Length: 218
Figure 1: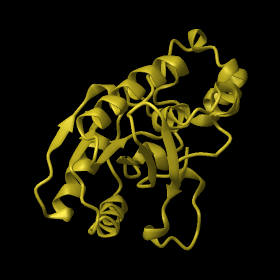
Figure 2 (figure 1 turned 180 degrees about the horizontal axis):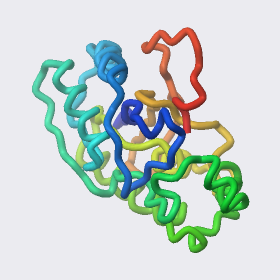
Figure 3 (figure 1 turned 30 degrees about the horizontal axis):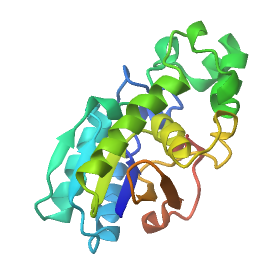
């Protein structure tokens, strides 16, 4: 069996500002995020991680490298472009409210009805494209470690779609479990690198947050 820990990167300036931050947008991690990554590492101190994989986008790559520093043990790190965030086209860098004003149906469907999302309007990737590239990568990583534990650091929208697809969720219901929070952990298991079971969804208990900030989750 392979166990897969899927981590959303630490919170960034654009996350805080409620701006779309896809494959072509990036902003720095907040100062608080480095402490939260340290808390994540503490929660993983007894997990025997065989390999870490990360998106090349700086917010995910820095999260992975900071995590490894705090784990303080030799774990291979591979950067893979298939783990990038959704390419959000014309929405990149825009405030959520601005997208809602300009393309209300696009925003509604992206957030709540993936089966109705028309990527051509904003020249973004489709859900199917993201699921296919990230799903292929995760399956490949699992084939490489059929009896181990791997950790993947990626992005909220791409992880949400791909994780749900891997456990067999229909496109129309990809959003039913809700979003993924910054520095959260979701866990999948698989015996054959094709069929996956969801063990844990969006765990942030180790961050010890007293209040939920809506900008933490997408």
